[in-house]
Image 1 (cartoon, helix red, strand yellow):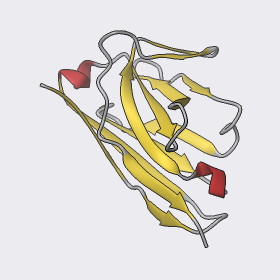
Image 2: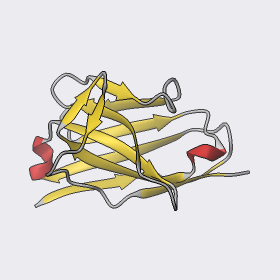
Image 3: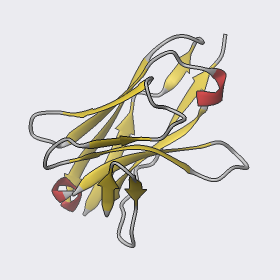
Image 4: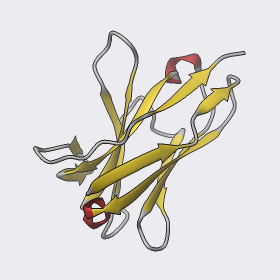
Length: 125
């Protein structure tokens, strides 16, 4: 069974920081790369960053570059997304997903991506 589980969301004040986690189990542990998407109600899901399992190579969308940092643990089963200098515009449900492509140019889910259940991040004072 392929499974990704996110955690770490919550309510944060503007300017604060948060770390989201995405843990892979089952077949998902053999992922090529894991990406993070976020979605606001009424808008399309936005791909914001990814990290490759083999070499830790990353991609960041312009909207998050400089504030978001992707990393993985030593056995590569958990990926972390550190979010700094949070803004109201960062409020969204954040999803992790296994990817078919992750490079300097972007990320691609492909036909067999496995999605986590999502975790809500709310930035508000």
